Image (cartoon, rainbow, N blue to C red; front, side):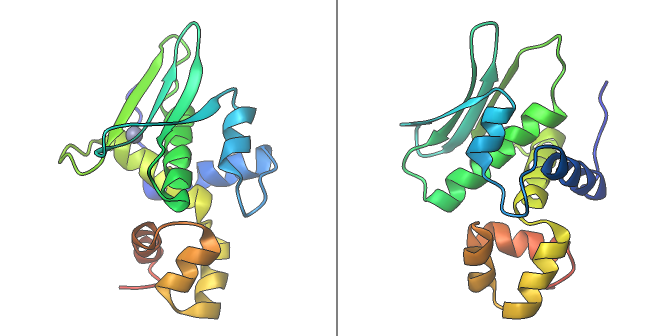
Length: 161
Ligand SMILES: [Zn+2]
């Protein structure tokens, strides 16, 4: 039950999701959430909360912090989709509240983050874009992610050190 996923596992799962849901290599995360049966809402969270996902008998919803920039909102939705796909035991409700920098970074958060990164920055596209620009800012803009998310992914892909 407590299956743990490595980064290569998560890349494989993200690739399957992209293929199965026909996302292409520029994933519309709202549409994907909808395809999974989740509505996405913006809400006024405290500054230290990025997002939340819940599924119970009445609702299947993702919330993102209204005050975040679009690239962060997009990553948050992708992260919550990671929880839905990876941490989805149909006998249980889902309820994750995602804090920023709370010093508590467990395996499931690691998995949701790396799934999100692989979903938004697929390996082959990332290599292609990086080889074209060799610039983290440009890469982040092209991929529709924050500079921080871009730098982490490029490092994990071994494209920057
Ligand atoms: Zn999370």
